[in-house]
Image (tube, rainbow, N blue to C red; front, side, top):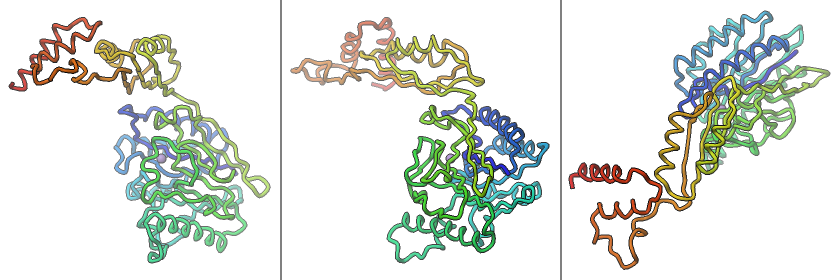
Length: 400
Ligand SMILES: [Mn+2]
């Protein structure tokens, strides 16, 4: 019996306006191949299926195309999907009945009946019980905590989450005890290392919980929400992480899925590294250094590498800005997208009063005279006359 754990697909995600659907498509192809080669029986996807609560039609299409391919694999694979904090329960739940008929279980929100999150499967006569707990929303869990004695909402929500997982374990003990048991979850477990792309992670109802809330019953806890793969408090409580980098802060993460195999009353846990189909890279230094790095850069990825340029120049220079803009608009090499850039100067923007002698009064000068003084400070600027003309044009536009 083999189970594959993944999460945080974020279908429809754009990274600074670059769509990541091609990355996800390559991941899906790789995932289907892995499911087939590893003889995976159950696929667990622990939330954040879509990036937005109102996903695009293209994102929906990509989701259904993946499911169609998955159910057509030579050996059937049970699929269990939960909704994350990015997902709309209504959107994820809409095709629930239809997907059920195709042996795909989706759980998008907690209900009054704890048994609604339970999925029982049988693989070669071996039973497996999964509590497919989605992201627990404030409104879904507050009733399970008694309100009056708690001072703030965060404590209340944290208590609601704790109670929900306690109820899950109670239900397991009453109805399924002795069977292999996996609990899914989409939440922030205290101490986990986060990255830029986990939106609003520590605010409001995303209250962090202790890993002890999962109790002693689960043989494995399949978590989503944190994009960097890691364990959370114990070796059998894990974040699979997102399959592709979703922000620049994840650029050095080795992405992975987890493969569990039931052996002698416990899950043997293995990681499978996901190939990187493009690199996310930050080039920094002076303009000359960044240019040098860019010109000697060797893109070798399947998809264009995404670059951030960080330029730090000693002297403020309009020419440096112009050159940088030119490179950004037209990178000198193929196979890269420059998706962000920043230029800073050590002698950051001179203030107007620095243009004047200490006894001078700015009111004694016209705007044109001040601009002339400022231009005079630029040594390596070629088009001073043009700049002056442009400045006058702007002044005229101001109607002065
Ligand atoms: Mn996520």
